[in-house]
Image (tube, rainbow over all chains, first blue to last red; front, side, top):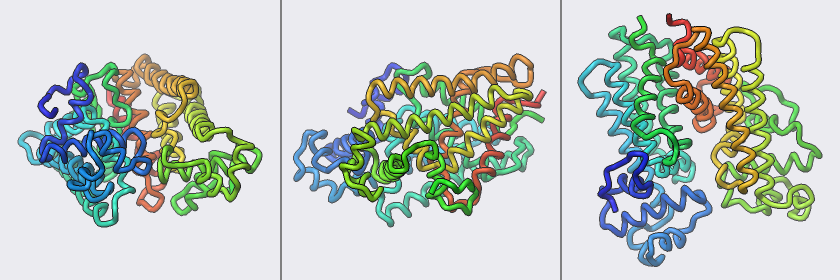
Length: 215
Length: 215
């Protein structure tokens, strides 16, 4: 269930969502995470019980407890995997070769593509932060701080080399990430645009936001 | 509880949220809507019961049923008021005097300010669409279509007068609205920026997205 790499419009939404979990083993633990994402996305974290999740995964509640002690542990694993992936995408782009404009376009394209292809997972990752326990929440906030720092670093580089003209670096960093993240809310696999097309459109719009190539 | 018009950073968050409901009467019906927004935002629509909402409003479940027959009716009223307000903001800006750039800046500033000042309400309005019944959902989708059309109209005007350079009008319209809507997700009354400051920053970023004043 985690082999399909195709995230194009025609791809099956469920297999697209499974991709993010390929690193989770054993298979039963992965199946439970995928079931939890589906349940949280459909009814919200607080309306979902561990019994619901076990049922969706075709397992007993007792089998669930072998892998996850609490519902919050499931949410934390989902949130951690999603935030690790986001950070990896943004730091890889920030550390890449090329001009600031090329690295910013790369960051936006890849980040948007992930939020489009994995929009159900991304919604849970983005909207259920308040349901995390204090310690887990602090850990995730730190990952978000580092994601923000990666994008900010590219923008600062572009300002320094005079590729970009950005009066408010922290505000623009916030807006760039926000624009990309909100793709998870509106993206529809049956819509007119593929994840790749949204990525290309957004890279262009973000380069305009930093006034790349204007001067 | 609905008199405070101040939406600045120092304003009480609860009174800021109440503003949107000033048109609802009698007062008990308004109190129930405010309670429903709080409950839905905190625990999600599906985890909230009408008993929870009545309790938050300091009323009995029987008193709630005088005003709202179902939980979905409460969500629909909230969604309808939020979407009516959004549409009014965007159509007023689109129909205003001034250049396309001035009208687009006005639309973004006002729309962002509303999403920041009423972020709790806006989250419920934006994230719980799937919980609406089919008929109510179709009605809200139509309001969203008209909001989209108002922004698109300003952008098309600007392209026609050569104020803007926009290769993908529908994609840019989608991105502008998405950027503004996502303010509801991240805005924090204790954060560094007031609703007015975010509005001004975003108006500048959106004018960059349409390449206003570049040529």
